[in-house]
Length: 156
Image: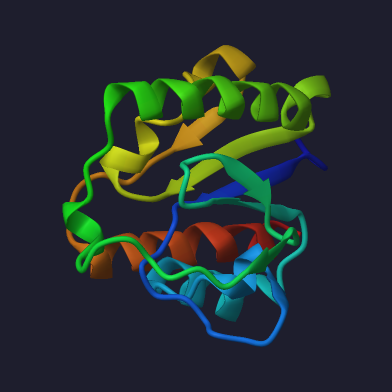
């Protein structure tokens, strides 16, 4: 497993940075997990970032995005139809087929709520270890994300 990269998958965020023009996906959203990731990824090698956008599909962290107002008034209360989830699952499966081929990644970390994770395919079939903290509130999950990111720094 030495030398393999790790993949961080960030779910969408209600908080967004307003800006002129386009911002990379990692910079566009400004929720807690995005702030933790931006703060700690700078000194770590071997971690690539993927971001889920509003339609539940995935883009690379450096994909330019224009500002869009978030839908609704509270992000945690969003619900998605089974049809929307299934459409996103199909698109995301193709995305992961390209991204995870050749055994490039040893581990995938999911930093998102359960409702967003439903738009992802079964990642076990790609032969990668999946880390998905599902207990505790935002604080413990943010701490787990920080520790996962920094784990690579100590091993490098």
